[in-house]
Image (cartoon, rainbow, N blue to C red; front, side, top):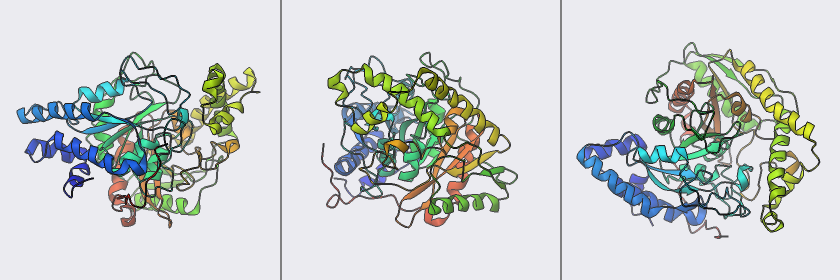
Length: 478
């Protein structure tokens, strides 16, 4: 269990850690120890970690401690604890994608993003859980116990980067890396009340790459998210869509809202209607920008009903192909909800699959066209608040599995940067994320607008981080 002093170290942000290391007021070994103790205390309830690398993290922290003592830190993340989502490879460990059906073959090399963070001196604490094959917006998988939300363990943290979202809110590490193909960073960030950033497509190298898939950081503050971007960007031979580093000053989060053209989107034309409490939070966010002098314009719907269903069809077809390649024994290990979801593509023709593929490109074009006259666009991340932890999806219905991703998925295929930052809470206490998107390659604008809103948001949107009472919350290991 944590001592009274330990939470202070585990709760420091990355900038505070670097300042404390430089001043000699803290050292990376004590900080990593505090974060591991936080995991010890909270994991019986949250189940956010797929695996832990305690010894390796402490060894990395000791090396960092010596560098700081010599006055030779490697950069802004030296000695800063971080976690990886379990779909990012770590050499010598299998990458099972949250599924018991995956052959546990040890990876031959680290993911590019892991190598970049480690080369910068960051301390890898472990890998966080993901939902089954990354295709559920919840903390449910066949390989792990259900991952739960620190604000209320009866709720889902979202997904597929659910472990990273829960780890961020619980204070496991200042920086927790997730991945996103239709909202998998932003959805758990919204439901866990943290910042979660999907950068411009290609900004962070992905291995293996996939259309729309983006790696991005999650944490308790926009500043931590931005700080990590200075280390994580750049090209890699494994990712043909990866972008070179550019001159972006990731430490500069200054912005003058006066004169910004801000779009407000509460209805894209498709998907589940927005809950009134969620809509109220977004309108309050728009008022915050308007009060600072921004020109705020409500946007009309721009997608045809059924657009997201076409994207869902392509993903089903892709996973149905992988499902049928499994042996019967491994098919039986796939989570039943996902197996049923995959079987929904069993009668899709090649022509229909290609049309669904093309719908991804068309979606990206529509989003770019609808948003091009705005500097930033505000919208919900999810149309509804957090849902029961035992549900695989907010709808709890395989036929409408993706009906909640319509505010997120368009930015994956348009390539635009988008971040979720907490904007308030429902009457039941569920965090509600405000999504802030910017034009392609304008990542700094998205982050700066999010930092502005984070500093100016309503007082009741900034509640103390959750603390778990383990007498009341303990979940089974399986």
